[in-house]
Length: 167
Image 1 (cartoon, rainbow, N blue to C red):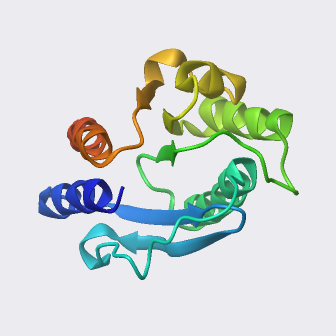
Image 2: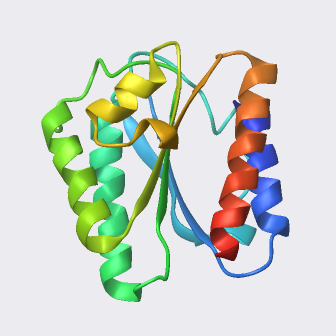
């Protein structure tokens, strides 16, 4: 996951144009490592900054990151918003947001604000999981939680994100 993310980050840093990233890391807890920071200023992850542990508070991470994104969008009006969700486990620890609330948040952002969403899920049926929160199957990808597969997944996503940024 670390090397895959860092490869993704490096690709995005080499891409021309302006892009900002919010990165929320989560397990039983969640926190925003960076919030709307220019991609070129983001440091790679390492074993000190990425320490997976515990359960999967996926819905809370999505809900809180959506609030951060909405606040940024309201203040700065970016041309595009791409929300990428990557998880190696199914939801099992959220306390503030549930599946229906996340589904409604995602639908509202797609319908009224033009946000795009991608769902990357390992150790689960990623296509069913993405649909359960309002993300179409063709915007989902299932991956294996092993180093080579994580890196390959991030490389594929990076290619797609670079294309999205060029539109």
